[in-house]
Amino acid sequence: MHSHYAFASDNTAGMCPEALEALCAANEGLVASYGDDPWTSAASDAFRDLFETHCDVYFVCTGTAANSLALASLCASYHSVIAHELAHIETDECGAPEFFSNGSKLLMGAGEQGKLHPESVKNLVTRRTDIHYPKPKALSISQSTEAGTVYRPDEIGALGEIARGHQLKIHMDGARFANAVASLGVSPAEVTWKAGVDVLCFSGTKNGLGMGEAVIFFDRALSEEFAYRCKQAGQLVSKMRYLSAPWLGLLSNDVWLKNARHANKMATQLRSSLAAIEGVRFAQPTEANGVFVCLPESVILGLRERGWKFYTFIGQGFARFMCSWKTREEDVERLVADVEALAGGSL
Ligand SMILES: *Cc1c(COP(=O)(O)O)cnc(C)c1O
Image (cartoon, rainbow, N blue to C red; front, side, top):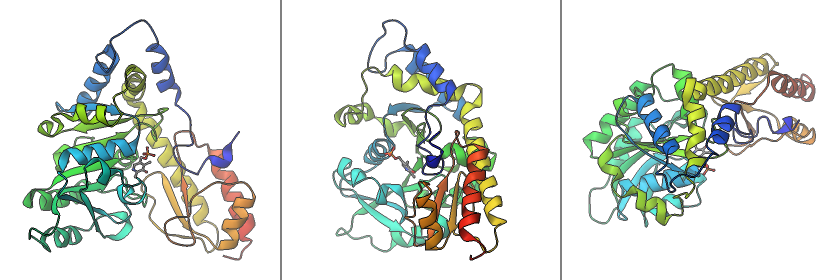
């Protein structure tokens, strides 16, 4: 059912059973509101265990809120944030990072495959030091990237070194953090605080929650008064247990990793099946749960006529197919069969 949405985004899937079960378990009794409940503290502790450090954890509803409020806590209004030109904070958040920081400017950097190149960061941070330019204060990187690629720990380390050299704080947009960790096979600590990340926005929505993102401060000094930011932004959920408890379903028994591994595996299968079709080319490497394919307009139109939903927003002729915890092998097979039939040897 609804398999036409199997590749539209990783947020077309529902809640995974473990998260749903944890949600139902939290639907018992009367407890304190605004986060002073046992589920919220248990979920926060579960993050501290996962990251092997004493981090500060906050729960908000959307990735846009998480990113914007996290960046606002790093920057004053006259500061700037360096990010890749494809970054979600630039292209898909309706100016929320600028709004919540009261005007911090985003400075767009470049780099292949959706990854910021260290030279580009260096250029942006050193090209102006005068009072007339918004002072660079933060570096934001997406893991995995909007192009479906993954920063390796040494790449984050290299960016981290530049950031530290110029007193930039590092924010990680982890909308697909789980997929990146699953792809790299490293510990979550290794690609975050150990590599210099100060604050991580870890998405639950795209991993298998109904909704919810965790804002995780590794530099705990930065989270001072963060609760007030959440409240003012309308992100302090009064029945917080419904936002936090489902995380226990993800964080127990590494369900988050299982979900991410499944999504990545489906993307790998989709890629290798598509690669077997004569003439198919790919716009990006497949390192996480997304496959970026160059298809002729006729095939793109044909897929849409057959009901498939997917985005074609990064460059012309590229189609993005995202996999989730819910994507099935039969969905992959159906999509591949349709591409094959539409291409008809014409690619
Ligand atoms: C999905 C996504 C977000 C969060 O989006 P919301 O719709 O605000 O939850 C943030 N960053 C990236 C890279 C995303 O793909």
